[in-house]
Image 1 (spheres, rainbow, N blue to C red):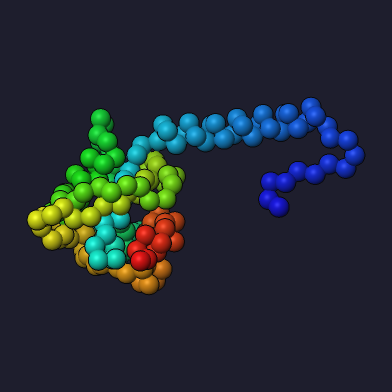
Image 2 (cartoon, rainbow, N blue to C red):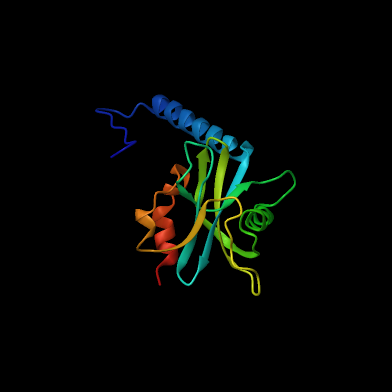
Length: 164
């Protein structure tokens, strides 16, 4: 078992306390780093059991890969407000945020938080304003998409989200 510690003979209580204390400090440090990191949102925009994927144009290392639309959370902005703003800027559409998908993910730009959303009633159809293309992807198609590395981490969650 990963993380399992075994001793032969009597349990060395002082060592156990030091080990647990060190582990608690490491977990606390990791949690504080997540809280302090710059927030980036991604949007699992769902319609008819499909999720919208957007094809990147930049930077060169990511150009051509697919992503969930999103971007940085601005100072004083909530995650939900950032999702709505980013979808308006990148897709020219209005969305309603439904909730969160998966857990916070450490990325180079900070911490990625994936949210679920749907198109607002009467809102315009999404357009590729900052991407080279858009496509609606079904649960069966999600694993085969050439996602950016950060979004690959939520492929299983996307599949679960889209299943009936």
